[in-house]
Image (tube, rainbow, N blue to C red; front, top):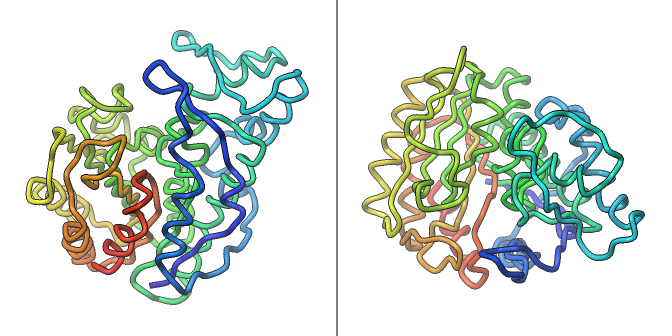
Length: 335
C-alpha cells in the first residue's frame, strides 16, 4: 500500500476554536499529521489535479470564498483567524453583502472551524492528496492506497464548512472515481462523528452509496444529521445508511455494525470504496467517547478488506496525538 501526503497540508494552523462556551487550543493541529508521517515510511509525492475535481463537488462561489476569506478578514482590519458568529439557519439565501462576517456565516455552520492564513493552501493540497492516491490506485492496479488528508473533509458540504473541514476530500475522490469509470462507488465513513457533509452531497444521488457508523447524534456532534431514519431522498432514496452507536462502544460491539454496512455495500454492487477513516474512535481520544483499542483497528481493517474491491483510505479525525500514528499504522496493517 502506498501512502500520500504533502507538507503544504501543515500550513493550516489556527490558534484556537470556540468549544463548549470557551476558547480552547485548536484540536485539529499540525501535530496530528506529523505523528502519522513520523510513524510510517515510504511517502509518495502529491500531484496537482487542479480545480476541476473540486468544482465537481463544491460550488464555485464557495471555493472562491475559501480562497479569499482570510485575506478579506485582514483587509477588514481584523487579526488572527477568521471565525463566523452569525449563521442564517432559516431562509438561507445567496445574498451578498461584501462583508467577511456575513460571508463566514453564510458558508459555515459552526464557530469551531476557523480560517487561518494557510487554510486554503492546506485544504487545496489535502484534496489533491486524495486525488493523487486515487490516481495511483487506478493506474497501479493495487488493492489499497492511503491519503493522509489534513485538514479532514467529511463535515464539509457542497457550499459550507464545519467540524474542522473545508473541502470534502472523500466526496471529491468518490466523484473522481465515478468519472473515471471505477464504479459503482461507495463511501464508508467510520469516523467517530457522522460525515454529514458527505451525506448531504450524495443524499439525492442514486449513483453513490454512503454508509456511516458513528456516535449517536442525539448525544454527539454534529447532532442534526446521522440519525438512522436518514436514508436518502428522491432518486437517492435507499442509498444512505446510518448506523449510530452509543457512547462507550468497544471493538466487539462495533463489529456487527461494520458487518451490516459491508453487507449493504456488497449487496448494492460497489466496485470501488472510498473509506473515510477516523482514529477518534480510540479509547484515548480527548473529544470522543468510543472505546476501540489498537488491535481492534487491525481486525476492522481486515473485515473491510474482505470486500475484495479497490479501497482508497482517506484520513478524517483522530486527536489523541500520542497514540495517533501507531493507531493509523495498526489500521493500515490490517489491509
